[in-house]
Length: 227
Ligand SMILES: Nc1ncnc2c1ncn2[C@@H]1O[C@H](COP(=O)(O)OP(=O)(O)OP(=O)(O)O)[C@@H](O)[C@H]1O
Ligand SMILES: [Mg+2]
Image (cartoon, rainbow, N blue to C red; front, side):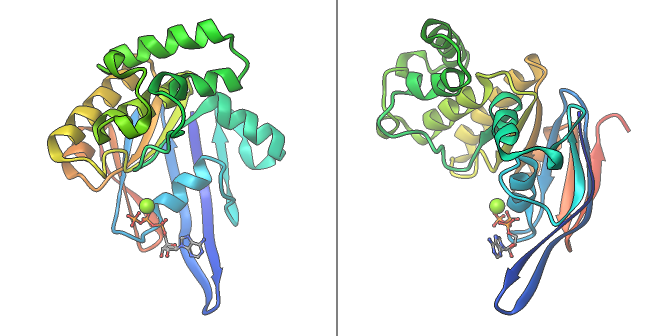
């Protein structure tokens, strides 16, 4: 469902070109849960931003659901992001004025769904994440783990084919991180959503179907459950 080949990325800096990704290849099958690990500064977030079409590569091909994404206009890219890709970040990025329920509903409303349909679906997802009782809370009145679970619900609500998660449990204590990771894992698996998750946790990486390591600008596969 996602195939990345010959991907290169560098940033211009006053000191010259800073190479970040050099000939990166990546393959994610339908419904598989993939981890990316690597040292701080190795380019994990850069790679996720490019895969999420929020940044451009210098070279390379990215094919998502048979669509060559670098050929799309900005308008088509925005549509693709809304319909096919969900994002979860280290900090939740929820809208502070909106309740957990409203935050979760938002991507569906943007894609044109009716209010009652979005509400029903958001409540169902929040319930699955054990968050039904907090549906009316604004983000400031949620714990870190609760806010991240709302971010997971918001990423899932459009039923994207791919979720990109950049250290989704990075700000949480160990037991809350474990709860959020396992709920996210179960929900994505049961909805057949592919996930690429950046993590510094070896334990979470070990639970994933495939693990890639980013090091020295290259991505190499470390583990695959079926091989
Ligand atoms: N816009 C930019 N301009 C110049 N350099 C950048 C830019 N964004 C990132 N970098 C550099 O690119 C490298 C990769 O950054 P990136 O954020 O992808 O690392 P990371 O692997 O996600 O690290 P961490 O684990 O700390 O989040 C870093 O050396 C960073 O300083
Ligand atoms: Mg990062």
